[in-house]
Amino acid sequence: MSTTTPQETITVTLGERSYPVWIGRGLLDDHARWRAALRGKHAMVISNSTVAPLYLERVARGLDGLHWSSFLLDDGEAHKSFSNVGSALEALSKLGATRDACVIALGGGVVGDLAGFTAACWMRGIDFIQMPTTLLSMVDSSVGGKTGVNLPAGKNLVGAFHQPRAVVADIGTLDSLPAREYRAGMAEVVKGAAIGDAPFFGWLEQNAAALAAREETALIQAIATKVRYKAGVVARDETEQGERALLNLGHTFGHALETAGRYTTLLHGEGVAVGMVLAARLSERLGMSATDDTQRLVGLLAAIGLPTTVPAGFDADHLLALMRLDKKNTAGTLRLILWRGIGRAEIVSGVDEADVLALLREACVGR
Ligand code: NAD
Ligand code: GLY
Image (tube, rainbow, N blue to C red; front, side, top):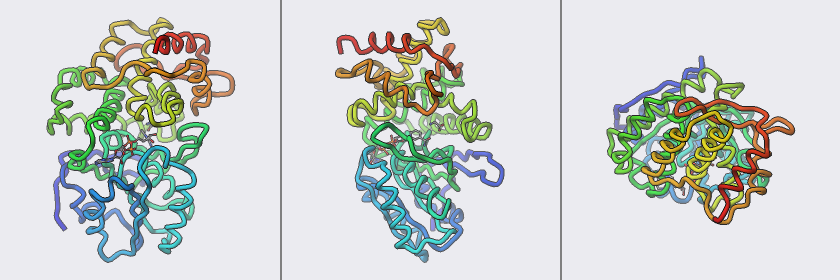
């Protein structure tokens, strides 16, 4: 059992359910550290067909002496499905998992969301540990306890709040992450700054090249700053009664784009990037923010290599119909996260659909 000192440890403070987010290189092999978070004798590692061949063995070495099994998903957003939760629950039953069993999510956000939801369902809720292996899952989905799966009607429509016992973010796993996925994760870093941390946004502008080149010092600082920001929001508003909704800047547009593209045209982070730009443009249209702020956002996203416009083939009316299904809406009105400029996001209820449609028609024109 090796021991590795995390370069950063951030605590999500939720009373008895508080947990650490460890960020550093080599943490998957620090069995003594994360194994202490397992309480019982059963563990099930949920991973996928891409990540398991790369990293499962290192995790398995830490499970020596336990009754454990693995459950592997096929790769892709389409597999974050209700039927796969059913199969994972069957696998827990086959393992004989008792109430003190632990699910370990080894992978990106798809694996983490599904594994967390599986843990939330088994015997009305058992422990789980997040071992995120994408940048997006390190800075966003592994922290905060939102778990769930998609339905054909829309993203994340079924789920539960269920906090992990620990988050083990081994940044060494990012060495094998494809460049496009890395950039998509950066969108969630930019999002945190755009919502509520203008100095961090400035820092990202200055360090965009270092981050694009995956320089480790800059990368760890970016991950830790975003996680610290999110941990603060989650500690204040765990179940999204207010402030936490701000974390969805760009998501109502982004989810519609992802769904309309059948989860193949845009990655989640890319959808969020384009969605943030649309939210900024709508804010401008509504007189809430200045063009300069939109331009800075577009500039930073472009410097990281992220898309900032709606790709070809999308239809404005279809996107609006999908946006109506967003969980933030109440019957009959759109509730969106807009902003007053960098670092100042706001929840806006009763947004006029005509304004949104006009913006979407402009964004989809000629594409
Ligand atoms: P993902 O899980 O699909 O992973 C992206 C791709 O990278 C996949 O092909 C995966 O197999 C591969 N991969 C993962 N780790 C790898 C590694 N180390 N080396 C090589 N390949 C690797 O996608 P994602 O971007 O991590 O997560 C997106 C999902 O997260 C979406 O379903 C989204 O809804 C969800 N999400 C949830 C929250 C939340 O709060 N729960 C927040 C943001 C996003
Ligand atoms: N990704 C939004 C949230 O965790 O609330």
